[in-house]
Image (spheres, rainbow, N blue to C red):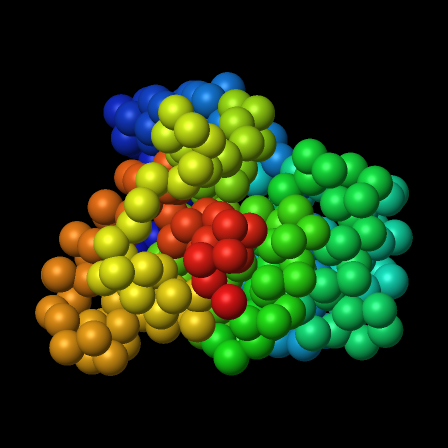
Length: 236
């Protein structure tokens, strides 16, 4: 029969060292990333909780605040000044696009990412034109969410503002027709696999075109690329 009692001294010592290493690793993460506050704005309680849980486990995230309407989003942003705001495009009241526009009109350097259904291109375009960093399709995988939020928080911590790469004359580098087709597919919320089926290309070929257009635009990910595409009229 097993009994519960004090652990042997050697095991206690080993566990203490492991706990100390764990605390040290977490401290290193804080030193490297800083501690950030993220505001999640979505009118669906289920979606809010899912996003809150996903974001709260990321390195460097200290607090995750939530809001259920455009008005509450504005109020919480004004009171807390979070480092990153995730906003659903369609919410009750003034809505996510207008909330994002008002936030960015007052704090232009705010980092705002829109969350949308794949077909709501117009809402995304309005928010991006107002200064939102990019967008995330609501059925994106957890890996895509984590990658976007992590990159956005890294940019905040290093005070980097993504800008399109331009040539000597100030124009965007020319994208090939295929790269434009891939970019526009991204703008419609399509996955690489879905874009490949539409263009009769393999998923790996789509990824190759995506990497090339990211490099030409100076974009870190598809959200930045699509945001730049909206601003420059490449995506409609």
